[in-house]
Amino acid sequence: MGTTRQMFLSVAEIQGLLGMSKSYCYELVAKLNDELEKMDKIVIPGKIPTQFFLEKFYGMELTDEMLEEARKHAVKKQTV
Image 1: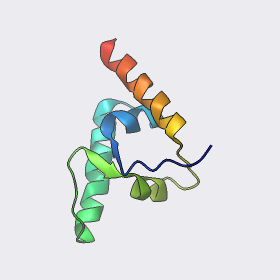
Image 2: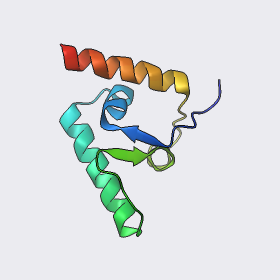
Image 3: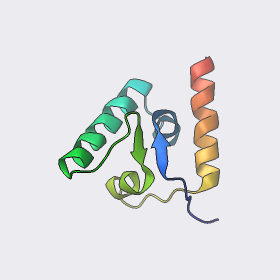
């Protein structure tokens, strides 16, 4: 099981990983993107660089399998 090579995480993926509400995850991504902008980095609304996300959540390791499960979880929440 290796770490993921996915460059960006979407709000839905973050929601599935953290088990938080969609609105909270949007706020979190906006906050993290604000930090990146202050560091003069280019940001993509609604997405966050995977590496930056992992730096902010100390000790978290992210695999492709975990991302797939997070996506499934997020899709289930949207259809309910």
